[in-house]
Image (cartoon, rainbow, N blue to C red; front, top):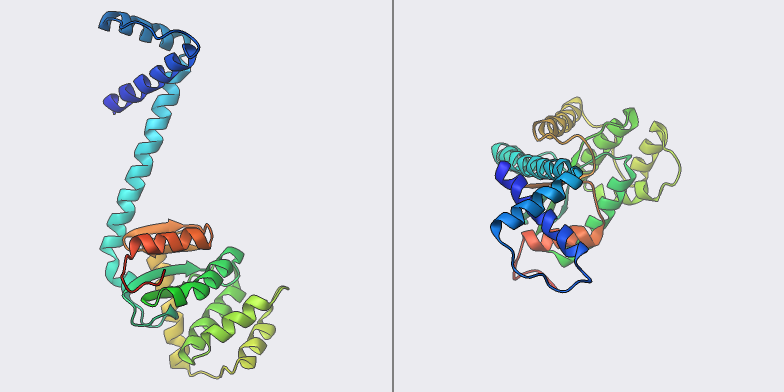
Length: 250
C-alpha cells in the first residue's frame, strides 16, 4: 500500500511540475536531494495531494478486490450458473456461448436488454442466453416471471415477450393473463408444473444472493459479472470479446 501511494504521489507530483513549467525552458537535471526537497515543498503547499492519492489508491484496491471476489464466487457456483433446466433460453439451446441474464419483468432497462438480445441472435448462432427471472417489483413481477417460464415450456416465449413489450401502460394481473391467452398459452397448468416454476424462480433469487447480485439487469459472461446494461453496442462487444469463434458472422 505504501509503495503504491508513493508511486502515485510521485506521478501526481510530476504532473504538477509539468503543468507549472509548461511554458518554460526544459529544466536542467537535478540531484536526488534537490528533487526530494522540491517534492516536500510541493506536498507541504498542496497537502490535499496526499489525501487524494490515498483515496484514489484505496478505491483502486477496493475495485480490484471486488472483481477478484466476483470471479471466486462465479467459480464456486459455476455448476448452478450453467444449469439451464427450467429457464427460458433465447438463441441456440445447444449453443456453447452462454450468457446468463438476470432481470425483472417490469424493469424498463431489462426490457431493452432482452429486446436487444432477441435482435442479435441471428448474428451469433452459437449464442445461448439463459433468462433468469429475478422478480422484486411486487406481485405482478412474480406473475409475469411465472408466465415467462410457462410460456417457454409451451413454446410461446418470444410471442409473449413481444406482446408484453408492446404494452405502454401499467399492467394488472387480469391483463397479463389475457395477453398470455392471446398468444396461445394454456394457463391451467398442473400444481406440479407450477411448483417447479416456483422452484426455478426461487433458485434464481438464491443464486443471485450467493453471487451478491442485488440489482437488475445483471448478466454473466464467462467468469465475469456485469451490472447494469449499457446498450446493444456495448453488450455485443463483450460477447465478441468473450467468445471469439470462426462460426460468428461479421
